[in-house]
Length: 119
Image (tube, rainbow, N blue to C red; front, side):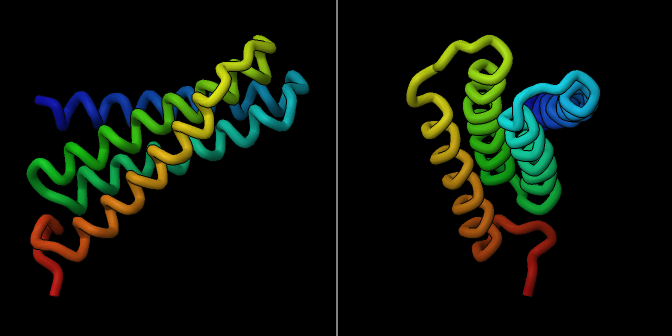
């Protein structure tokens, strides 16, 4: 069940990323919105990759880390650019969490958590 929810969240990130990219292109949003959109897209796909390439708890953990980091990082950039509300250290915290997600994906990819077992 949790895997399906994580796929839904990744798809929602992709959907809202397209909407934000279109809005940014046509409404003259600040460049920070473009940065948030790119990071949102990349990590929606990274989350799906974790769910597809890893198995068991490793896939769930890695996807949750990617999605949490995306929410914090992109959310803080959107807040700053569109609402003029700074969330302080939320964006850097989200960025560090995203880096942890990449480290987990790499680590689990080298272990038996990869699916199918890679040689």
